[in-house]
Image (cartoon, rainbow, N blue to C red; front, side, top):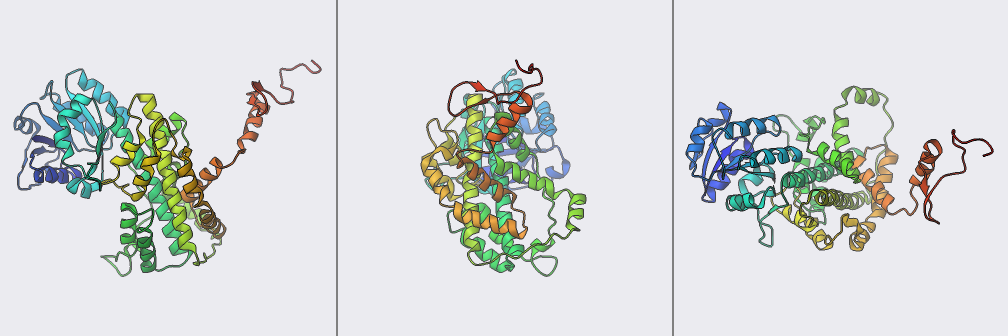
Length: 463
C-alpha cells in the first residue's frame, strides 16, 4: 500500500523508514527545503506537494507529521486544493482534540476522510513500533488501518498497540491523557532522584544502581529504564556526569496543560498531573527562585536506611494513582462525547511502544471494566495501594521535614489520604459557604437542603 507523508522531521523520517521496511511505498515531502534534503533508500522525497500527490494512487492516504497548531491547518489548506472525495488525511501530531474535531467536520463536508492519531514512543517508537491512539469515522479508519497497523508495536501477547476510540478527537484525547500521566510519572521519578542524591547523598553510580533495581520491580517500564541510564551518564563535553550540566528549566508542548483544562472542565480530580505541570512552570520562575534560594532555608540529610524501599513504594503508588486519575478523566469525557468507554482498551494500547509502557498496565487491566470510572473504586486496586501507604508516608514525612520538594509524590499521597478519609475538611467549606453566601448544605442525618443558625443580612431581627 502507498502512503504519502508530509513532514520529514525526526518522527516523520522514522515512520517513513518503518513503513518502508514493512513493504509499503512511501512518497514524502516537507514545507522546508532543509527537511526535503533528507534521502533514504526506497523512499521518494518530492520537491513539492502536487508532485507527491501525483505519485500516489487514489484513494490517497496522507499522513501529516508537523507541529501541532497553525501548521496543521496550513498543510490541510494546501492539501485540499489537490485532493478530493475518498482521500484521507491523518494528523499524527500532538494536536488539541477540539482542533481535530473542527478539522474532521470541515473535511467531511468535502468528502475527505480525517483521522486524528496520537502517536507515542518518540523516534525509537516511530522507527521500530509505536503506540497509536486513533480517532475518526470507522469507515475512514478501516481504509487506513492496513498501513497504520504495520507501524504499531506488538505487546507481549501478540496484540498490536493500536486502537480506535471513537469519532472526532477521541484518539488525540487519549494521547493527551497519556501525556498528562507521563508528566506525573516523570516528575515523580525526578523527585525520587532528588531525594536519593541531594537528600541522601548517593553518588551517581549508587543512584543509577538503585533505580535499575526499581526497574526490576512493580514499576518497571521505559521511564525507569531510561532514568537509570541517565543517572550516571558521563558528560561528553566535560568531566563528571551529564546531569550536573543540564539546566533545570523544563520544557512543555501544551498537552499537560490541556489535560489539566480537561480535568477542570469535566470536574475530575487529577492532582498528580496538575502538580507535574506546576513543577514545570515553577522551574521557569527564575527571579522568584533566585530570591528564595538566597534565603538559604536549612535542609537536612535523609537517613539512607530503608529510604530506597520507601521511595520505591511511594513511586509505585504514585504511578497507580496517576494512571487511575488519567483514565478516570477519559471515562468521563468518553461518556460525554460518545466515545468507547472500555478503560481496559486504553491501558492495553499503551503496553508496548509508548513512553508509558510498564508492567503495571497489565496488572490494572483486569480491574477496570463495566461502568467503573475511577479505578480506585475497585477494592483490589484500593487494597493494593493501601499497602504502600505506610512506606509512602515515611518517605514524604522525611522529605518534608528535611526541606525537599516532593510536589507530585506528596500531592498524590494527599489524594489517596483524602479518598480514605470519611469526613473531609470540605465539611467546614460547606459551612463557610453557607455562612457568607447562604448556599446551603446537605446534612448527614436527614434529607433536604439546610442552613446554619446564623442570621443573614436580609433577615429581620426577631422574625
